[in-house]
Image (cartoon, rainbow, N blue to C red):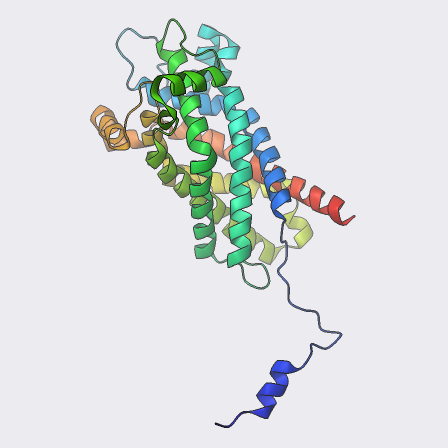
Length: 318
């Protein structure tokens, strides 16, 4: 068999000194991904929790028993103001501490997983195709759901449901709710709704991270690198990704919330209950509340993450 000496020479020839090696750009270390993601998640949860509270209240109120006082309005601000007048401002932040800690943890896991998978799937220049971005987001969402989201969401939803439907509170806080649930029903009860939560989280992460990646690549191709680090621009890209995410993933969120109520239900039972109570349209119950939260959270989490990551990378190389 003959060989091509010219091809062999080209394949073994060293790269000229003036020609740089191709390396992936914007590679973020696992430690920075985890830290920046956790900080971004904590800030996001603190700012946007009232919208999450209002959304959960509306979804749970559809199943309220007669005679129980629940906010009648479906508008997020009306629910928030009505709850504050009736039960005080502190009631709006029921379950907040659990969500802040949980969101910090799960955001750290999400960005760590996404960046790790992104580095594996990205081209030599660091770009990620839309399909690969969606795949990376889906895998990250699945990991996030199993490791962090399902337990914290179960506790948060149980706290809000308990505050809404009981004259005497069963739970004194997040850790008390966790201890009570485990003592009464075992550890498996903390993972009630795992399937619906994983479906929702993988879909949400795939759409959210994937759409943000696409938007960022489009903006990066039309602006300078310095411009893409602009906080206002990053906020706008994250907010846009949040809008897309809400309407594509709301049914998963509605089923997940119903499954993780204080009494609990399987995924299929929750789906049947939602359809029985309000038909197909009920699957998008609470979308306006979630829209307000995800517009803010999308803008906040990506802006904080990008800036904290840049700060940490700068201090590491400085």
